[in-house]
Image 1 (spheres, rainbow, N blue to C red):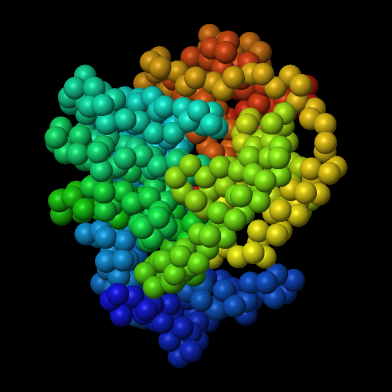
Image 2 (cartoon, rainbow, N blue to C red; image 1 turned 45 degrees about the horizontal axis):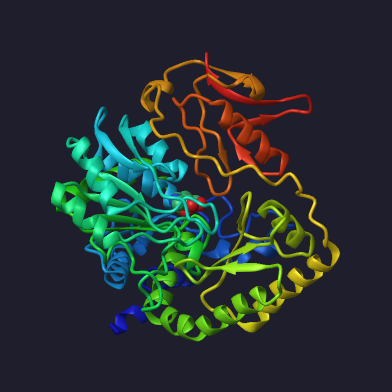
Length: 473
Ligand SMILES: Cc1ncc(COP(=O)(O)O)c(C=O)c1O
């Protein structure tokens, strides 16, 4: 291992600066916490000391030449990229910037239909025309997973002028795709492969984890460091190969889309997350993999429960026949253990890479307590199959929908109307209806069904008297 991977140049510069300067005369207004709300200060004070701006040797995220550049270079080396950028707007901003980098207004781009909303929003901002790739559904969970190389080849043959392919690997539930095969197809057709790897920042760190997209031949990859590595919320990285012209365009797009006052505590936590990935994560995974297996076996040994981990062992999918995923999540939450997300069939626990028996006990005890209390499933009507995402879906191009006026329409009258706003269960944030798609009767029923099971939605307005979605006027 490169011994420099133990260094944290950005954090060190921040600490040096704090120790040698008074920060009364520049932003932020809390002046390292001295003028912060007294009630909040005990919780914030250590972080507020580091909450500085681009002064002295602290460099500039948008044109880095010093410690930020050094920290990003260490990350590029650790993750196997030609160049890496630190992001303070999550994978969201990485996805927006990448679509903008590869597409000019009117350009086509192949997009997996179960992408995160930020990919579709990127298409709206760039004026791009998405061509959808329908993912296969995983039989054991009913969840949409990946696409095949053959499918991608067929789509690229039918749409030879697209500018890029944008895939998601893995999905929220840890189901991975054969990125090397998909990258080979893209290479043959001469288009860049962009991968949203928001949930796979830990990939490739151990041979028993899936290989990361950037080492599998993708041109550029977004990873939410905050999801699977020990980094603060909103932190992410983009790793890229590609030409220097491509990387310069990406730099410009990131500068346009990110704050001109990026948070130094967030950036420094990326420096630490990279150090963790490069120096400690492999050892943690080596130690915790048997614990993960033990946890899965324990849950599966409880008869009525099922615990699955399709590709990424650190995503634990929980099922209990007769109970919806929403009920599983609500049940465990009532025992003090919130899960990451739930859907109609599954609850999802995201495990730490350093999982130990103590954390396992917390989950197992909650499972046992709730199982004792909730013995008889209420979900006798649990027979609505998962929704098929629409095949040929865009009735109005995304970029045109934003120009149209919208109106809120009662959900029960929405069938046949064109969506003005995406409707998405959140999390995971994958739209069941995109702007420009027509609400079908089936989609309306599906949304009503999920709402009745307690799903949280974005793009749905629920009032005491009715439920509305926004449609084109
Ligand atoms: C697949 C996928 N991509 C991108 C994002 C956005 O990531 P972030 O929260 O880091 O902005 C998410 C968020 O859940 C996601 O699930």
